[in-house]
Length: 334
Image (cartoon, rainbow, N blue to C red; front, side, top):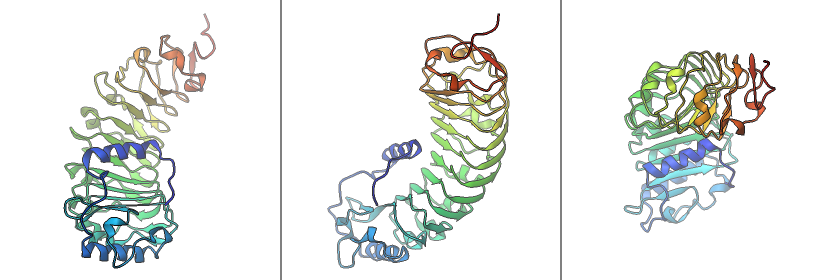
């Protein structure tokens, strides 16, 4: 379980986790519950007894293992299982469902982990975070997730198929969804966003159709729908007063006139490249301090607005448009 560098989406998830759980606390002073110990040993067996779990032994206190799990300070029950970089070839352990007080499951960077998400997880009524990433887990997103009290769902870089289910909009406390890097198809369902929703990442799938119009009604921190086959006009997502800090709609088939768009004042990351955007580069961007900006490979035309923040972006941010000109591109013809 060696440490590896974390992508931005995972760092966002960790920060979110710290806000909604007590996952990052000192080891428990309570002894391990005997039924939890039995479940953990079963998990180890279902994973093929990997050397990463060498400290998971019978007749020991699991709360002292400090290897891929954590116990509650108050009652000693296992409330977190976090396993990553495991050299295993096995299904997702069904025995995870035998840890009734679990709040967090993280199974990361284990490409040999395969099969569907086991239905036994439906028993975990206290589960707040479910993360399975960089795996070979397959099948549809299971409907039993509706029975949980999830705040964050991260099923990424795996082999999930089928549509994004509408029932996700009926999980009342769900505020973070990352389903990037799968083989999901169909349209994006309406209603996923609500007043307390914060992060939506659906990039690198096979999604089609238009972005639901109701997504423009909510204040969201991050929206990443890049590398799909989305169509239509997404300009309702842009509003100067929104608290949004990241928008990535790149590598789609979106069409709108950018000229008069007023982007969120607080946005720091904006990628609209590889679409069919028309008009000129919005003058409202002159007053926004973007750390990353890209509108290349579109159908934009006219002079790039000058301003203190516009000069910080290189030519790569603007290339392969219809007729853009001006710094950092060649001068406009008079």
